[in-house]
Length: 298
View (cartoon, rainbow, N blue to C red):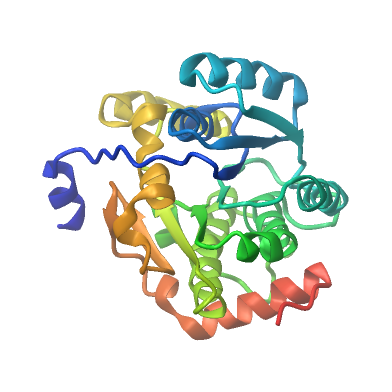
């Protein structure tokens, strides 16, 4: 019912300005990340897009500057599948930027063949959850110093379709690419929930969201029958600009200032799965993530 109500709600828009604010968006050289970057640049923010492929990122920066009229856009190298790259990126931000007002953990991989990150994580949990968990941890002092600030985690309705296998988080015993993707997106929701508790009273708020079923490059790993179904469904999907709206909403909407830890879809609060509200599961995932990444997050 929530989805039907949201469908008939007037499109969200806001003239909120971000002059003097700094934004980092991961994976913003394409799709909804790039559309988010264009929108936030139009609002006057300094936008840093964090990407693995610097050639594509450079082309995206030009496009973002042209579309927004804001010259204050740059790209920096970040490979979320490698903790060394994440640490180097975070160090560069911490040393080079006096503030970070909005962190958007947008990058992701989806239903890909089995592979591992440089640190031995299954690729989807590694990039979509572990990489962003570590990045957020390393940037958090700067984000707190910049409060009021926001952390936005792009999840998916796919978080409903699987739980988290804490005993085999890297799918080494058996691999189902769809379940591994769902698990990583549920991890985004749980991470947001846990983070909100730990950030109470700091002026930093956090949100997770479903962008909608969006026409992006993420679908390239679908098999033949899935590709056919996807083509049939395409008229009912969102383009990248429409898909970016809930991310932008979570990043700038003034009424969310006092909200934290929630899940959003179609620029409105939405229901997440029972597992997504499970604080015990959230805590276990938090502890496991800290242990596997060798970080102590008080």
